[in-house]
Length: 128
Image (cartoon, rainbow, N blue to C red):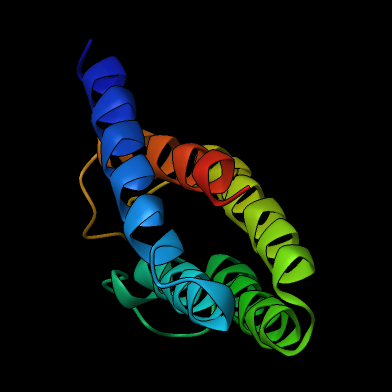
């Protein structure tokens, strides 16, 4: 039940956040959505208790690097294409949330992954 509430709450927040970014219009909406996606990617590694090199931290670092590259590429292409690329990035981050989720090494609560996944899917849908 707690996960369902987090998922729905995250979806509502994601939709509202994407709506706010879309209202920037044009390139501003792409840059804003890209910056938000990079921020979402940074949360998992930033929330780790142990920052020593581990396979999970390496995966999270690679996700941050790929997300940053996607955001830069989206900002340099035309606006509709940039939005589509970032919507795909937001949807992929939802899959990451379900696959990775907070670990025993994370400061994130158990409900965070479903909240973030709901946010990501709704953000992607509204961005399109």
